Image 1 (cartoon, rainbow, N blue to C red):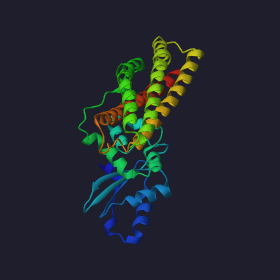
Image 2: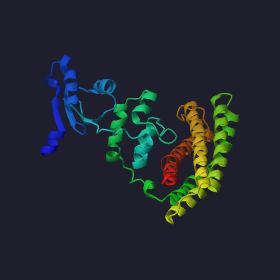
Image 3: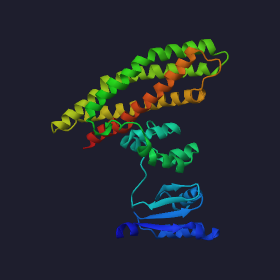
Length: 319
């Protein structure tokens, strides 16, 4: 109990003169040792304090709402430990894929753009980072989704097979319909909705890119990763040629992921988040539904490769 009281200090801001509120909070925050926290009580959302603290002290704190109005607000501000940095979107999704639903909600790329922190990604899109971080903190408490599969615990050879059997299989099954209906809807409705012409071009690009991409993964990269795992299990080190092959293939695959991801993001923008116009027919509806499902599957697909399979394979090469 004594340790807890030492680590968490409380400040009731409502009794402080307005002009002295922020200076007092800053002074109390500066007195904190790394790892300690300050809980502030206020009668309104202290969100402006977050941005002022970030601007004047830098990214050295964590911000957590404990109570959010309507009459009382409590925020826990923790000073980070020395050397502690924010997790990236990819790292957060790797630990708990349920939190990826928050990223999807706000259009934050956790697969191809998974190396950015939440603060960086929100700043780029002009999003309220306090709101996004709060939803992330609550995701594991409020999610009704079953516990996500433990991808990060799987062996790399098993994960590679899972990607092929689940995601590659889905892509191969879906590509023919996606290509056919994108062309059909553009031909029938393109005169009234010219954005469909570009959507069709982008959809054809996605289909072509992924078709060749999956073949390269299944015939070159994934077998090389399995060979690497087998070598490590036998206590041997990878030869220079195998290491170079994996490094080069990973770079190529990540570049192709980005190409496809950018194309699907552009489709989402052109379609106004897959919003159907009043004159949409059944084919139009099917196309947008398929595109949205395809994009959702690809986010998980690329996340498993960019944020788990590829980094772990590269780590094995270094060891």
